[in-house]
Length: 594
Ligand SMILES: CC(=O)SCCNC(=O)CCNC(=O)[C@H](O)C(C)(C)COP(=O)(O)OP(=O)(O)OC[C@H]1O[C@@H](n2cnc3c(N)ncnc32)[C@H](O)[C@@H]1OP(=O)(O)O
Ligand SMILES: CC(C)C(=O)C(=O)O
Image 1 (cartoon, helix red, strand yellow):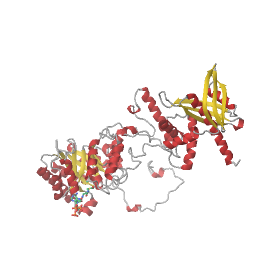
Image 2: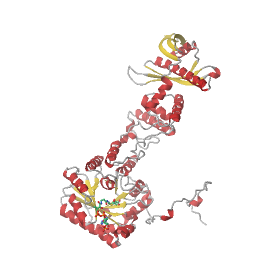
Image 3: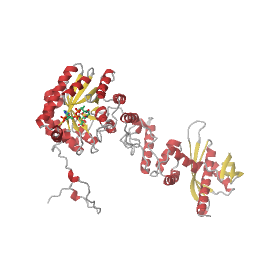
Image 4: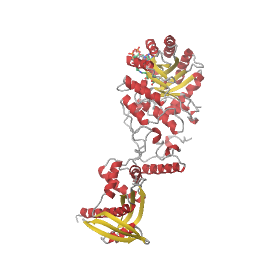
């Protein structure tokens, strides 16, 4: 007996046995793919951008709850042009006066740049084709896009036509397009596109037969291409089957050199982007889709994701996505539909890490990039991008690092330290990060939700900077004294103003010496300082790790001081540690009811 190493039966048995589903899956049957045993696409690579067509104003618009008003359509059109789309389907002019008038307004107001070709869709019906051609009078370049359904289900149920009658509908429609283009559009650089609708559900050999018949009518040649658009009108199978269909189609279609094979994937299974990418590997030349995947039902393939996927591979998408927020705002305005916060590359949350280990890795990654850039005398945005958890530099799509790290109960010291540094210029030493992170954690555990940079500052400040009881540093005078320092400080201790003096090998140890006169026993374990900003009025930050108390009673904790004088900042840090210690001890006593 031979064993198939890929069969499920060879999988290790889990002790957890899944139960049969109550879902009526027997009502469905598997998609029947075309057989392409010698397929070549799996080893191909995408090395350049395809031709793009945006159908936001047609397939996107026809699926909206509130179709776009003329002014919103115009706003969308202008943005598509600015982004660099050269082929734009602008509507279905025979469907309504609104659509017809919109096409006319684009042409009459000279809104279409010379290097942009507009396209309009029509059914294969003479009255509709006539009106469609009329809508394009005066355009510099334009394309009529004709479709009819070729799938067996549609022939049987919707059109009630045989295969021969279906082919006749397509060829007759093509003849009519040519006739009305001759009649109205002799001055237009005219192009033709044909779609065997529901291509994926049509036996591929029959789709090829219909398209070859259409080719025979159109007679493509040099300077007279035909676009054959192969829609996954409803996505019904895994992406590899679409790729197989496209490779097979490309091998068998006549006049391949004058045919632009175009993809028009929908996203019913959620795999339109993958299907498009595999179908490009299989030889397609052109892709139709919508920004953010708008369009019928689950949408057309998303042009933003496709374009930026190329970008991440070092391939020029030939579309400008450098202000993704502006693109998103415009699309949201025009479609009246929100973009999901996790939408690839553009959602509000896609460059944000809440979880501790992600934040830690991002923080380290950005620090390395900054150092590398500085060593080359460049900015971070000029060197090759490589950062944990961030597939692209948010800056490249016009986003900043502000929202890269956000703090909540899932966060760790790395994220919190990143925000303290990037937002508040405090570069906390590692063990202080660990201590402060526990303070923040207890806040998020009790309050829940996110901690904004402002709230983080308030928590930090309440914890380390504003405690003034029982000890408050009022003034300090330090003088170098031989090999060491002598210090005189005025403090308020438990409400009483006291003048204290001490000596040591530095101002901090001299102050610690002075404090012992008041009964505060402090040992400094670690000390760091840094300036917060450059210039004469620079503030300094000082961090001390201290052991406060004596013997078994001693505790290790940090104190922080901020002051224009580095000496005052460092002494304030010692006071901060003492006050925190006493606050905690008093709190423990109170909890114990003492
Ligand atoms: C997959 C896609 O997205 S295809 C594009 C779909 N977009 C749209 O439909 C939006 C614009 N459409 C419309 O406004 C309308 O459908 C119109 C104005 C074009 C036509 O409206 P109506 O004349 O009322 O016809 P209706 O839309 O109901 O079409 C059904 C008829 O057209 C036929 N038909 C449908 N598609 C086609 C086609 N591509 N070619 C020829 N005939 C077609 C149907 O078989 C049916 O014929 P029947 O009436 O003899 O049964
Ligand atoms: C008209 C065709 C291309 C279409 O929109 C589809 O099949 O989804």
